[in-house]
Amino acid sequence: MRNFFNFLRSRTFIIQLGLALLAVIILVFSLLRWLNNTTNHGEFVEVPDFSKMSVMDMRKAVENANLRYEVLDSANYSPNYPRFSIIEQDPPAGNKVKENRKIYFTINPSGYKKVTVPNIIQVTQRNASSMLRAVGLDVQRVTYIDELGKDMVYYIKYKGKRINTGDKLPKTSKVELVCGNGTITSRAKIKADSE
Image: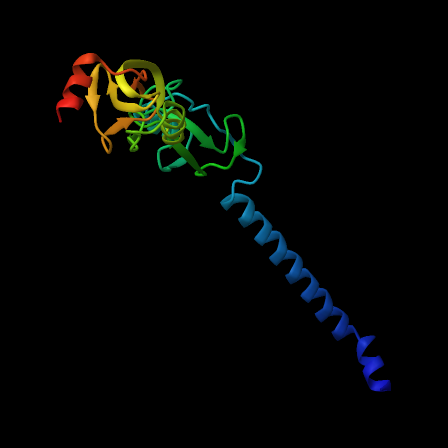
């Protein structure tokens, strides 16, 4: 034990300890300097605002800012943005990021996606309106014809043309419901009596 304490106080041990500490300091300093150079520590790029830019303009702006990009799936169509333009970006405009950072974009599609017209024939006008709203269609107007079923839907029109259950229309399309007014014409009554 006495020899061990003598060794700890010896000149050889102190020199070796000093050299080991110096090697660690040099190694840490070199590592920090290398990290600083390779990660561009303290150097940031401000993310531009890509909102409403076309995809071609966005690509040029991304390259000029020394960034990378990835296009995510298109969102639901927004009439407030041009077709095939940027709706969202992550990170948002104005954020400071490192060079070569990837920016994620959501693109506005060319139009509303199409939805299937539900079966609303022989359904009340009120229920039919609810069913149409549920799939993303709007009732622009309701017209009535002489048919016995009061407020019962007999057919649907889109842009003046009759459409069928299962047809596809762009979401938010406005349709016309043609419903019965609860009366039957004398011609229809004569036909029904003859049968």
